[in-house]
Every structure is written in structure tokens, then in C-alpha cells.
Amino acid sequence: AYVFCLLVQIYLTDTIFLH
Image 1 (tube, rainbow, N blue to C red):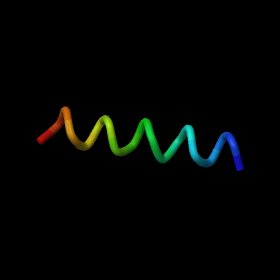
Image 2 (image 1 turned 30 degrees about the vertical axis):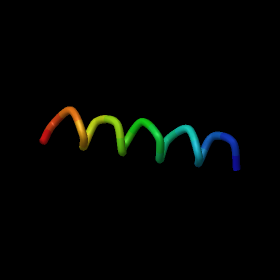
Image 3 (image 1 turned 135 degrees about the vertical axis):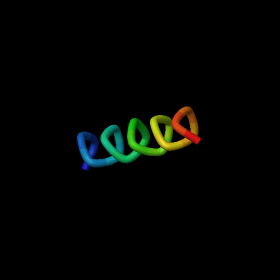
Image 4 (image 1 turned 90 degrees about the vertical axis):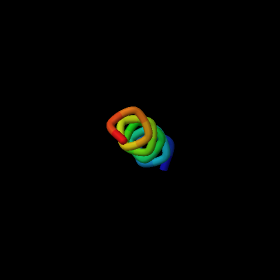
């Protein structure tokens, strides 16, 4: 669960920085 949340957070951050 922790790893999943961390992965999602990184994905969201990457998406925000990408756009």
C-alpha cells in the first residue's frame, strides 16, 4: 500500500511537471 501510494504520488508529480 505504501509503495503504491508513493508510486501514485510520483506519477502525479511527474504529470504536473510534465504539463
